[in-house]
Image 1 (cartoon, rainbow, N blue to C red):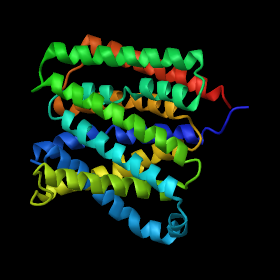
Image 2 (tube, one colour):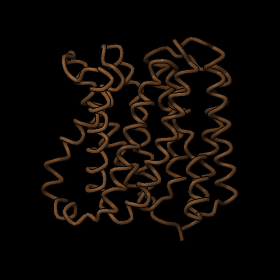
Image 3 (tube, rainbow, N blue to C red):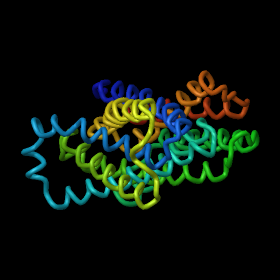
Image 4 (cartoon, rainbow, N blue to C red):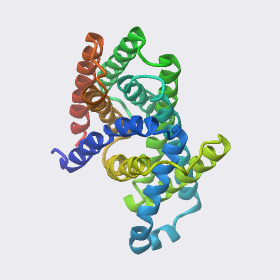
Length: 296
């Protein structure tokens, strides 16, 4: 019997919304906002917007939070901070398509960690899906390096890979905690933790948090409302019923949406190798979806 389609619909809506983040970040960077400042502003605003709702709906649950779950949530938030700091920084050096694709390579790391630490068995469809998505990611990355149209593709691609590693920790911890915590309580602790870490990070790095144009602040607010509160919250909601491996694979649809937006807005043309990579990504996602539905 197939499980409800709602988690899948919410997940893919979240991926679509999240794919706009790269574009808004590029605009914010062009407006003079440093990368860590963008990350910090995004999480601070998201946490502030959530606060009244949390106080009204989830305060008792937060007060009952065990020490273990609190520590896990703090760890998840720290991983999220590292993810945003490295990935947003990568967009200043490499193409939108390559950055979004490489930061989404976490299915491999999540699947391996799930197998070794949580003893989750991987079906052949999941393994083939992961292989296809990784091949697609490699194709997109090589295509970007060959064109050499960005300031420092190698550094940008490395930062995106760091973003993938930290996102893996964020998703794995989230998969465990979402079985016990409501979505509102979980995202509030995680987003607030990430906000604090990023504010401290920005201060230590000498990156300002104030003094930008109203246009720049509107972009950061849009990041908080869209990709963060709608996009990431949809992903965290899906983690309560879907595996972390599948959620990570579904996130590989983000590079496709980001690349299409970049084509229209920044004239970042598709190279033939990039198009091959996108086809491989879609094939991997389709196989992973079949494997996940087969568990129901």
